[in-house]
Length: 82
Image 1: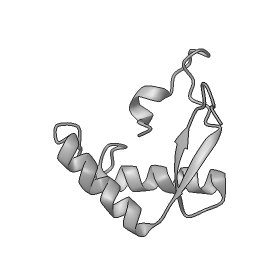
Image 2 (image 1 turned 180 degrees about the vertical axis):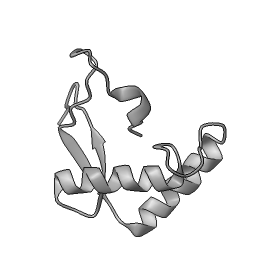
Image 3 (image 1 turned 90 degrees about the vertical axis):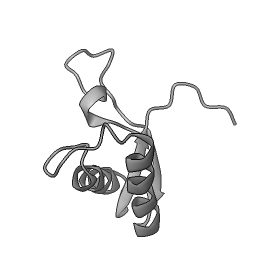
Image 4 (image 1 turned 45 degrees about the vertical axis):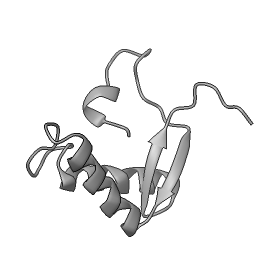
């Protein structure tokens, strides 16, 4: 999962520039929040934080806008095997 607190920087070698998106729907978003809370309980934050449930949903909406859908998960391809 993309984590905006770690993937964005001023260093050009570390800047996250996605080139692959996976569309998500309401059901997947709900499951994503549940899994995040279960697997990373110490990482979940209160409201108005990119690691809050609200923040995760907002970030997915932002990636959805980039990829022309409601919600999306963004990835950076390093090696593509077909």
